[in-house]
Structure formats: structure tokens, C-alpha cells
Length: 393
Image (cartoon, rainbow, N blue to C red; front, side, top):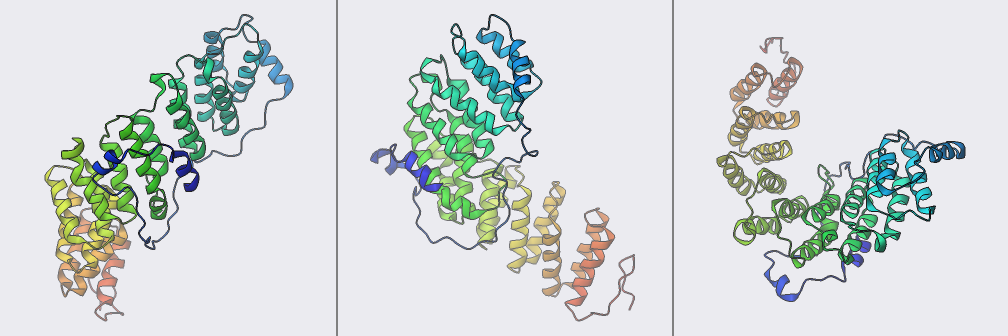
């Protein structure tokens, strides 16, 4: 897939002057790191197998109910009011067989939106292909192309989405040209939000960088969303120096203000690399601006501090996040408590566990597990903990 996308984008390289102005590397050939693979939600989840197609009798009856004098507005109204989404494609094909019917984007737009919402990908793809074959005769195809690209991205069909993108770039209608939202949809499809597969980010960063160059070439100023994609891609593939270069150029080069996601991607990536000093600087900077990091960034930052032996800093960050409404997960809580215990602060670890319970962060079962882990580190394997958290030696 990466080879296909590079082939699609190869014809549109940025001029040398533009590339030289980019404040970060657009091509990376570093050896990828090994990561723990986690399932990613790249493709749109489906509700189940597609329903069987309508019978010829159902299609004939539905077509007979259409207005006798079928116009694009009347067809669009019929497509919007039909309860069975399986009949949308037969309606379109029937209308195009009528000699007096003039194709219009409106019925196609209604059809592809409804078919995408119903998860009928095969019919959706056929309706899009039908509309693309009529593009030269369709007035104002911009909304239709933008909707098709968006839903292809939602379905995870990157090859199809980039085909629509090339149609948009080749369109004679200025209103159909790619916009900032077009590029953001492609960026989001290439680097799926919420996905944990860092290798995917690494593999597709060349394509993202090429798209970014084309975005600049089209004269579209990047916004914080577009720059966040670059920061996220570099950070999650552990190319943190590239991510930091983009971050430091956001304000002076592009006039964009970093948001909570910008900082969270960097804090998460720096924490994963064990660069706790840099992560702490960015964490304190974002908190000084009143921004709240995401939960994954909180967990990564507090865990990194604990694993680096900075137990007090980890505890401080954990309570600061708790006061702000961000509660770290059970693995992070255990790392903080055990690191306090290993640092010889057993009483502090006990106090942290009991304070967690008092604040409703942990229940009695997790509290007992945490206390047992503290005491087992000191050789108290036979220690029993009562419901009040007291030792019953």
C-alpha cells in the first residue's frame, strides 16, 4: 500500500526552493525500533454481514413508485425518503437510462452518504464509480468528491481515497480542488487516531510528508491539525527530534499555536524514549498554559518517571493529574507505589495507597494488591492485610 501511495504522489514533488524551506526532514531512512504491537482501529467497524440484494420484484415495485417525470431534485428526494438503502443504487441506474434525465451531483451525494451510513460498501463503491464516470458532465462536483474521499477514508480504503484525491487535483472546477479538510482526512486515514501501531506511523511518514509538500504547493496554509499529524507521526515512530523541530516551528513558521494534542504526542513519545527531562519540561509548559494532557500521555509520563527512579516526581505528577480529572491506569499506579517502596519510602507508599482509596481512585481489592506488592518487595510474603489496610501479622 505504501508503494502504491508513493506512486500516486510521485508526480507532484515540491519545488527545490519549497523543500529547502521545510524546517524538518521529509524523508527518513532510520532503522525502525521494535515496539509492542497493539491492535489498531484503522478500518471502520462493520455492524455485520451485508444484507442480501433486493429481489427483482422489489426493485421493479420501487422503481414504479418513482415520479413519472423524474428530475434531479425529485430523485434526490426519493433517495432521501426511501427506507431500504439497498434500493438506492437501482434508483440511480434507472434514472441514468432515461433519455430526458440530466445527471446532477445532488442525487449521487444523497446516495453515497446514505450507503456509507448503512455500511453498504459494495453499493457505495459502485455509486461512486458511477458518479466518477459522469464527472465531465456534472456541474459543481466539489461536494460529491469531498464526501466520497471522506467516506473512503472512513472505510479504510486508502487506494480509493487517493484516486478521488487525484480527481480533485485534476478537476477544472476550482471549488472541487483539495482543501485543508481534504488533506486532514487523508492524514487521519494514514495515521489513524487512537491507533497504537507505531510501525504503521513509521511506514507511512514518507507519504504524509509528500502530502504535506503538496498541501504547501497548493497554497493551502497548514493549520494546527495538519502540523499535529506530523508531530504525532514522528513522535509515535520515535523520531522525536523531527517531532520537536516541527513543534518549535509551529508558531514562527506557520503562525499556529500548539494545542493539548501537540504537547500530549510529544510527552508520550519522549516518555517512551526515557527522555524524562524533556518530557517534564513540555509537561510543565502545557500545564502552565492550562492545557490538560491526554490519558495515554499521562500514563506514559508518570510511568517513565517511576521507571527512571524519580518516584517523588511521579507521585507529584500523578496527584496533579488526579486533581485535574485525569486518573492514571492501574499499571501506572502500581509502578509508582512499587518504585516508592524500592526507594526505601515504604511508609510513603502505604500512605499513597490509602489516599488513593480515600479519593475513590482504587477499590478495596486493588488496595490490598498494592499493599501486598509493597510488603512482598521487603520479604513480607506471609503478610496479611485486613479490610482496613492494617497488617495482621
